[in-house]
Length: 294
Image (cartoon, rainbow, N blue to C red; front, side, top):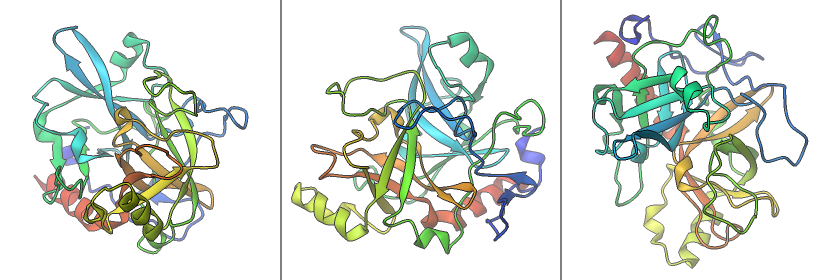
């Protein structure tokens, strides 16, 4: 079914033990997990995570460039910087439900080609300031979570109350450029990975970036800062821009932010920065409502 003619799929979370968007449960991670300490995520452990890929006409192949999150049947949320002017009709695709991108045939079977008209970037997005780093992709055809896409599921968006509680929480990031301290920052694994992180207070983050001579005006209320727990990893890489920062409330995961700009230098001293989702809930709702009526 086309996403333009379906009813609006958006509702904020209630207080129910099983959060839903409309009639679709959200934030349900797979119960199949690897051993504690493994940085490889179990197959479809986070079934909302997608790979954004750009077609390279020189090599005649697709390349993973960013990540994103399914937020309902019709929409993927990612970073604005993933959806810039490099893309024209036919050279951007969304690949869903793939644990290992090295199998190009499987990726092709789970792809959705994105048209330029399917992309919505926040009107206040600033590449210079790295602020309002929010982007939406409207899928041409809706996902069928009870049928052919039953292995997938959306992540929950936060309520206004939950959005105030993320600071000092231990959460999880996921993507394909993550890594524990291996000494090789150029590794870009095809296999989906996860990494536990701690969300810092805004004041802690601002202080850390100022000490690194980064203009502190770049950090605003729309930013949320994370650092790897203990010595467990290096954080996300550029190919994981747009990927989810997911925090667990009761029995479901909530999207706290999307990867905006990675850490620099020592990750324990200079945290990675995510774009805070709670700041743009009303914008998401408006865009989806307008697009559904179009």
